[in-house]
Amino acid sequence: MNDESPIPGELVEQIKNERRRARLSQEELAALAGISRRPIFLLETGRGSIRVDTLVKILDALGLALEIRPKGPKP
Image 1 (tube, one colour):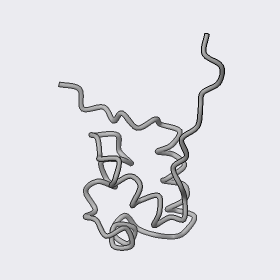
Image 2 (spheres, rainbow, N blue to C red):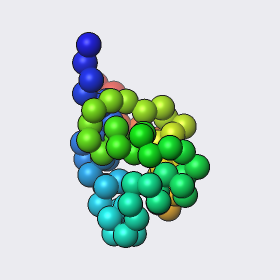
Image 3 (cartoon, one colour):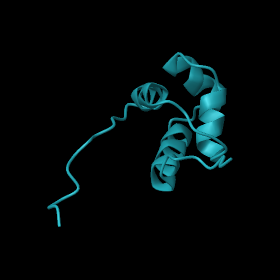
Image 4 (cartoon, rainbow, N blue to C red):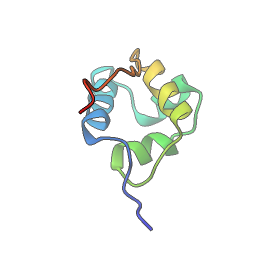
């Protein structure tokens, strides 16, 4: 079984950096997002996956948004 997070490392780093910039602990961010601390721990350590709705709650609590856009022209 693969326990590696499917969340891209660049996104994880952006989330960690924003949490630290806001001077929030994982517990404080969890409270703001209305979730438990575990998904934040899993996300930041790359030890598992989290649900998309949970990711959106974390981003929202940090004042960030998830944007979906086309990759570019199809080959």
